[in-house]
Amino acid sequence: PQLAEQLVRTVRALRSLELKKSPSIAETLDWAHTLLALGLSTLDEAAVRSTLGVVLKHASDQERAAIELRLN
Image (cartoon, one colour):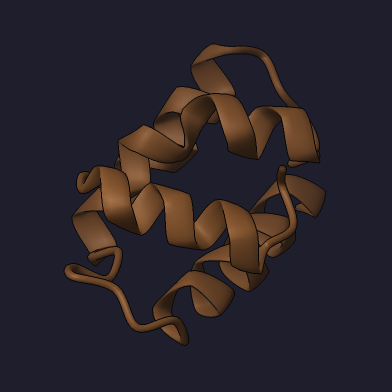
């Protein structure tokens, strides 16, 4: 439940940004599957930083998200 809640909050934050392509439901599910496959139970900064490309396909969107989510 904690991972799911954190994922929903993070995707909601990503969708509020002006991105070339906001995360879709399919990309969100892909991200969740990736996090689970990595054995993660929480979504911390390191996990977001290392897996952001799963949910955001454009490099510019990843850069903007990293800045806005303060992952730098």
